[in-house]
Image 1 (cartoon, protein in one colour):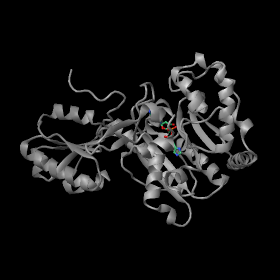
Image 2 (image 1 turned 60 degrees about the horizontal axis):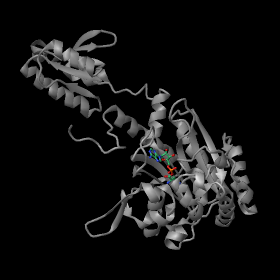
Image 3 (image 1 turned 90 degrees about the horizontal axis):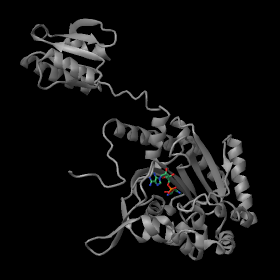
Image 4 (image 1 turned 30 degrees about the horizontal axis):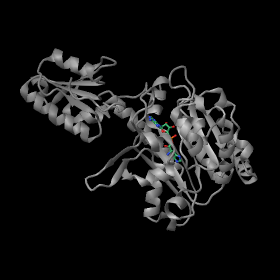
Length: 418
Ligand code: HAM
């Protein structure tokens, strides 16, 4: 067997690549309407960028990062997510010195050594947004609505928006203590990771992929009972603005997210489907009040979300949303002898210069084989040039849909097609 791609990665060829490009272009257009500007950061970062911010006890940091020493002995990590990397850039480039809030969007590959399954890859692409600056619950609602709208604007229907508040750090510390006590009696029956999590970070037991769905997890104390008044008021405001925007959402008290940096508002758009994608998140995000302070002593809160482009593509394929993608060739130019081929090459290039998709057969003189090629390329028009047409500066043009066939001058071809 020859070379094979790395497990959990994908090749996107032709139409598949076109679909991915279309998704990100559409998202970028929507993001610009929401006032976001693009940021492009390196795919690799110094490992410490992710460890503390994403959380030393999270699955991402403990099991999933692609980390290696470079030739200079530095620990480098292929980014598993964008938020910490964008925060690093925000701090390093002192963007906090600019007036007002900063709205950034990014798109690109992320890397996580995860168990391979439907919709879960080791290299996947995210479209993400981050907002930095002191703004209250109205921003949270606007951003949640934006994430939800991104999916809707692509035509995706079968998703549920779930929101929750995980409160501030002091509420969560109290909650952690309660969980430690609650799980203490039954932790022996949990997976090896959860046995470690109970002391390091009991909250992570709630989003364990191995023990997911267990009664003990479903019946665990709810974080909402530990929120302080400030967090409760904040969350109520977020909900009020979402109601005002007419956004359909469900409050899910079990939604805690798998990354440690969040505070208060968190949200996900969950896939509803009759296959293995059911229950997976397509959008995930939330507020993080302390990350920039912890990373660079800059007291600016952030909020953001990311969408998995592969999951969006799978959903759109399932819902038939790419069916109108037009990949056909506008004009196929057919030369029936050596000299006519040269004419077809010239005409093809003139058409292309005018933005018309034109293709030709470089080798064959046979009409039969060239008709086959035109059919394979789904050509709308076939322009045939044989000796007679060439000598008279003409082209015989066939409309493959109506079967109508006319002879026009070569100079009129572009005008006619346009
Ligand atoms: P996340 O929930 O880890 O959040 O990922 C966001 C989205 O990326 C998921 O909802 C999913 O669509 C996609 N995704 C994640 N892992 C995979 C995978 N292995 N294969 C395919 N798709 C995947 C974050 O990454 C946060 N940085 C989001 C954020 C931005 N929070 C605040 N700002």
